[in-house]
Image (cartoon, rainbow, N blue to C red; front, side):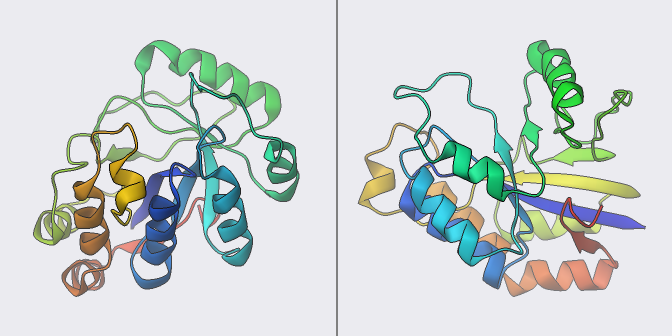
Length: 209
């Protein structure tokens, strides 16, 4: 059995990114997202989350925020059935695992890039594999379809950064701008949907796992 969690980072970053993520969920293969509590469009993301209860939402760990946490953070935490912390940086992975165990957070992101083996951490879970770190900002529908066809056995999280690109995103401090629309186009492509169906890959969220 091959299972795929398609997880969009940066929910809450800008409104056009938020809208793109929801579009990828409604009309594409996106199953999950991670919310940035320090994002400028955090409250907008919370509103969209309430309108799309099937979208699996975790917490995007942000170590540095210019303006701190908005007042709606406590409301969000009370409304989520599952809180997760995701991180890619090996130096902080052990600390995040300890936090996850302490607060009963069931899932953390598997670190160290595509399909690298990592021993299980007691008390928390990761997918069997992780992909997308090297591809983000660069892939199109054909690349994503090929990755899906070659997924290994077990569960895989595919990290992505979709979104619409409007003047709001263009004014933001990020290297990922026009590429977000290309990623969104790939996630909603019939070619990618066909690759999932033809390969027998099970599209899931963390709730399903």
